[in-house]
Image (cartoon, rainbow, N blue to C red; front, side, top):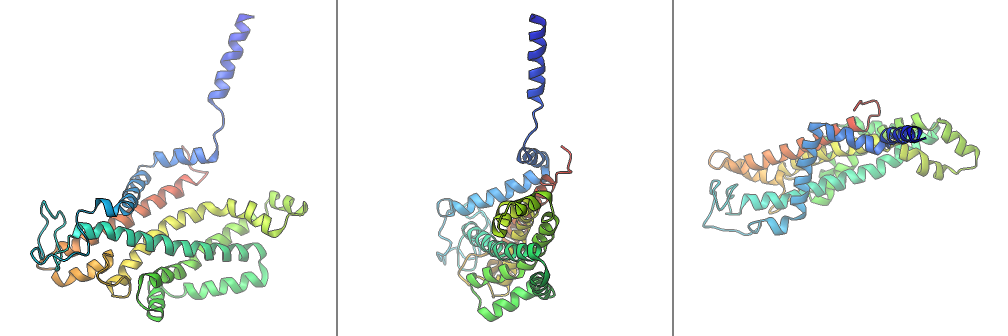
Length: 299
């Protein structure tokens, strides 16, 4: 009896140690094993924390002029130097993170809401609705993204709100097409047909079954589109069509620094490197999420 009880207890330990894990646990494990994804996560988390704590960690007022410290090179008191008005570049970079991240996240948020809605409707109902929606998306995709944003800003006027709207509009077709293809691959599954046979409404099926099973590629795409949105916003501000001076937006800082590229290189180098680092971080994070959400990836 004692031997049989020991055997049963050992078998219980073996079975409990190999209990199946949930898909989210598997995803997290795959993500943690991806070194590039973790580096991207650390970079993006760092800039998000900096943006949140900007008023408290900024050493100087980013808008305060100091005529006694014009165009100073990097030093102990000003690690990133000062600009043509004596403003601390580090403080402006810190506060600029709020602007750039807000533009990227709000712009992509607009794209997700509109694009996912249109893609879901087109993929689920099909027919004439699908044709009309996707032809409109094809027209928008015919224009290069930056040129489309440039045209929208030229119509609406140069300010931060219009930049968010422009970025949101030119990213809508990408989300719509990805969501449509995902919905088409899901809507003929057995559990969808079973819900229909039980009298489930279209709205219930879409919200309860379709969108949750199609959200993984949207998460990956949204992370990468934030990087694109930040880069686009910086480009528009560099051309004078985005955030306006004295706003410490990184693209606007690049535009201000190009006039002093020979005498004060840090004015263009620092914001340029920061933009590159943030875009790199979001792209690495998106690549890691794509690999982690792929069920065919082996741990």
